[in-house]
Length: 138
Image (cartoon, rainbow, N blue to C red):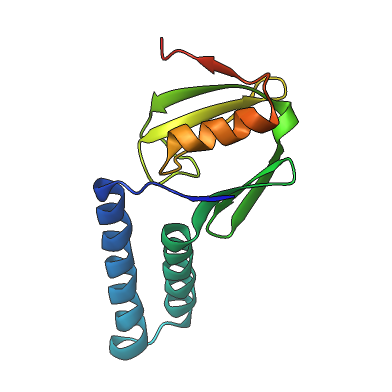
């Protein structure tokens, strides 16, 4: 079962503004004053941001939570998940929204993600691992 990431407007504005800046620098590096390093770096940056925007998703498959954040991939065994809590956090995570699910797994490991349908996502995880506890936000 696959879940897309929720996308906040402010996150979209930041990502698309950065893409615009990088495309402008790419244009300048190509047509105004040729700069091969600028072309390469800007191509990589635009590709990275586009992949994060379009390919951030979460998949529950064969007892594994597969997290894709652009080119970055992470797998977590669902049996290792100990607790989940809803959180609002603007800091970096494989999520495109501030409204996130913080997943605690193994000992002292956690990750925050932002599936669109958080309730259904949590129910799917708890079906596979009924020991997962819901923690309060306090």
